[in-house]
Amino acid sequence: MHVPDPTNWLQRADRWLPDRCTGPRYAWDMAFDEILGERIRMLLGDDPDVSERRMFGGLVFMVAGNMACGVIRDDLLVRVGREDYDALVVQPFAGPMQMGDRTMGGFLVVDGEGVAEDDQLDAWVDRGVTFAVSLPPK
Image 1 (cartoon, one colour):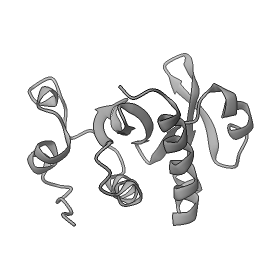
Image 2 (spheres, one colour):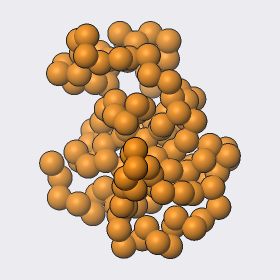
Image 3 (cartoon, one colour):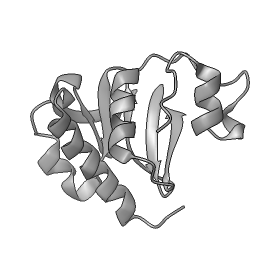
Image 4 (cartoon, one colour):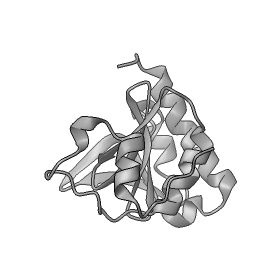
């Protein structure tokens, strides 16, 4: 399996990002936890329906064109949907996703401590993927 050099942004852009995401408008040096990103990549494997995009100042993982999860700074972003949101937002290390003054319904931010162990990360990523595949592909 090819493991990219996380310090080589050109290599990463060529491998995972679409051509329209290159150019001066995109800041490839956004600060997010690259190790957490690699751990998520390992969980998602080589599924052809999985893609990556720079979004929200971090990195998000799409499944069949729908956002499943991502990394913002040192935290995990998980799309769980509105139905499961109330039950999951009260879980240890989980909280609502804030964009400015807005709370993004159906999205959670899990503190980095809450995904320090592989089984913790696997459970949260699985929730995001499960929700993403429940939506129509884009």
